[in-house]
Image (cartoon, rainbow, N blue to C red):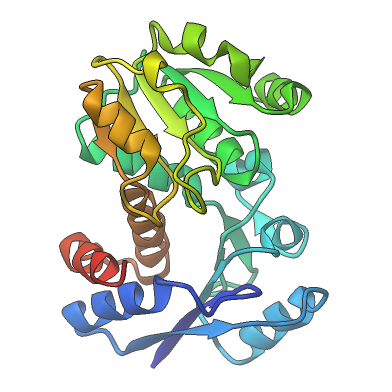
Length: 266
């Protein structure tokens, strides 16, 4: 049996186990996905233990994504983003990857959003914002980052080719001619609020909200009312899991089954 899993603290809320196990069952793979919750200062020991036990791969979540970068050999994208959320333990050396960027890009492309040559606005410059900004840039989009702390937005923009950093008050101007908007903050998760003024939204936008609880956030409601194309956060969550699954197993992921399982838990 092949064993994969998730390491984080806490992990009890995670939807990754049912999503991955549904994929294993669908393809008839002799594999299981389990969760691990080491102490915040015990990631190195946890990774050594996982390797010693023959675990083939791990997803990494809060608070360990940045720490994992220093404990494995990151690929170029993970190093640029500054965080690892997927570890491959199948080779002689543990390698680190970041599937959040690909998750966002595949979510948008799955909804027929053209990215090459697009003008994209990313709200938030934290971990998710960094992944999305690099992913959009690599896909050929011009990226503007808007963040509550403008110096953080500008620092990120300095790392992303051709990007620019702004304060949130610039959003109406940035969105006027934008093609893509991604909310990479947690605004809308705990309250019925949006990080973007509703009047700044328009029908030529495609809007992805990384928040997936609730599925329909205030931002997505406002965007739909403005005639924009909307993509909920479960699609990004799905595709980051799909990327990890395909990396670990070498199999094409049963996306429909994983999506159905994920949404049945939300």
